[in-house]
Image (cartoon, rainbow, N blue to C red; front, side, top):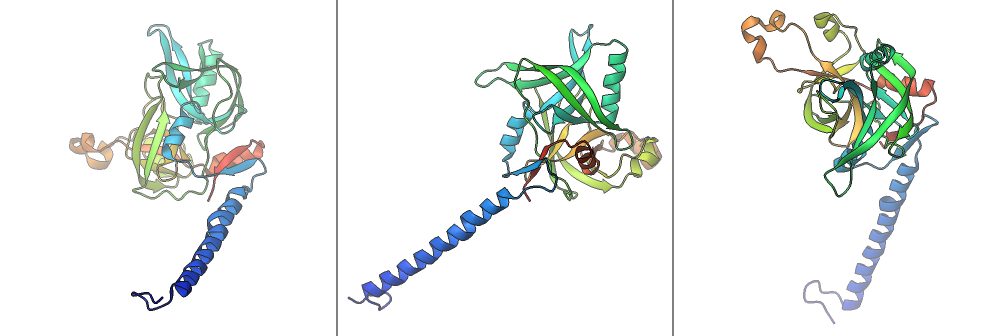
Amino acid sequence: MLCQFCGHTGTVSFMKTRRRSEVMIASFLTFGLVLPFLNTQKKASHPGAEKERPLGFGEVIDHANHGVCAIVRADNQLGFGVPIGSGFFVNDSGYFVTNAHVARSYFSLRGQGVPVGLSVPTFVPNSSRIGGAGVADVTEVEISDEADIALLRADNFRGAGKPNFLRLKFDSEIRPGDEVAITGFPLSHPDPITITASVASAWENGTFVDDLSGGRPPGPYYFVDKAIFRGFSGSPVYLRATGDVVGIAARTLSAPLETIVGPSDALKVPALGQVLTLDKLRGMLTKHNVSYTTAAR
């Protein structure tokens, strides 16, 4: 029987349709299943690193609920712990990252006998309560004052199992306008975790902050359009498009702005947060043979 639309017999049309379907299925099996499998099985160059599938941002926040820690100083007047910085775990063996100036404050306070410790707050599923873990011991692995990055290790967790660890993305080209997010414990809020969205605004190479504020150049970094309050230092910074950790929150630009724009305009200039890249951290992890997980390219 001739088809009224194409003029072919029903048998011929069916055979062509079947042949197209077979080709499409073969292509899907090759490019839709095999290639992603090969990509996900590709290992990172570091012997202890593993690559995983891309994560949605909601999954990243879930990990942050038990993968980002607060470095807390006890305050007897307020009656609770006050964060002096934040950090994030790179594996479930207790290795975590923060800023060097946060780590120095921690060990200085501990040396003075001030109660200070590590807290890993986390939401309790299906409730409004906040649980978490305390850490009995924190030891120094390496602190780089020049890079303002510290690699530490937490041992003897109390009240919870192993921490979640966050996925790192090295060599990430952050451009002005890219959306990022920061999770940590700013000001006097040790829990719950605080999440703030931001936009990358500029890229520098270690001279601008040094010239203006007199601090040490911490290496490659970029600015974001949000202030990094006390307690936020050491927090992970994520690229919103992928959910990967691409930086470490460091500090707010504290230059005397009146020297740049004049006294009358100084208060009109928005605060800029400084975010360190992960370049120096990768060297630390490799040097000490610390395992970590990287983002799939």
